[in-house]
Length: 313
Image (cartoon, rainbow, N blue to C red; front, side, top):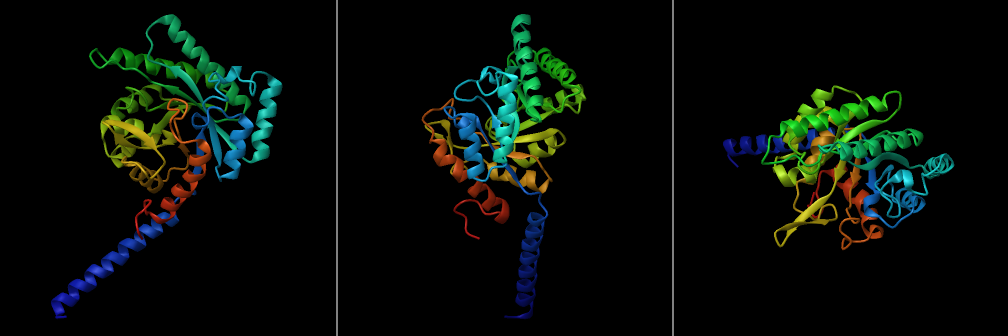
């Protein structure tokens, strides 16, 4: 090996080891990931069964999007009275699992006054219930922003709805999170809504796949835009089957979901990474008994090593 080749070899090798050391150091300073799943993935389960599965499989929390098929949680037998709410709160505490989010069906885009009021009233019931459960978040949707019409009136209605809900939540421990969902997935518009509301009671759920499947924006770029407002994250993976995306367990898809996890972790995100397995809407998906145990293992392996499933070290 001549001197020029030796020098190039040493520079390349030292650079490689320095990069590896930087990556390892970066991972070592990341906050411990908090994992959760949505009950959207177990639509037939009771609250107790869902909490048992979370505790058994190493989850820190669950977000509740229906219990045993009942989407309006205020009408679920688990929460339909003060006694049942108190019992369910004790049950979660006894299992060591935090109820972190209540998923309302509320859509804030509606122009019809009666429809709009019905959706806002539902969100307010959920805020009251969340406060009783010591649950920090209630999720709402943007949802349908017309593509062939002036977008501003719809965006203004969504913003006004968030402001009204934030005012309702004052004095509680609950915040309202707007999910990146439906037509409400354009980062700049979402930031505009957050800035217009100007309330610590309002933030975002970044559903990475929902956004990326529409915008195709690299997750690191989207995260850089949305970072100040992200309080909660939905994780799911998918692959194209006959021209349409089909949900698959984490690591088996084609989405850049691991790029998003890396951006969040490196950016100091301290919230929950919540698996949203949409079995309620897609009954053909694998059963929660199969998917829920897989998610923490795959997630934690990647989080610790930086290696995607099937990727050698």
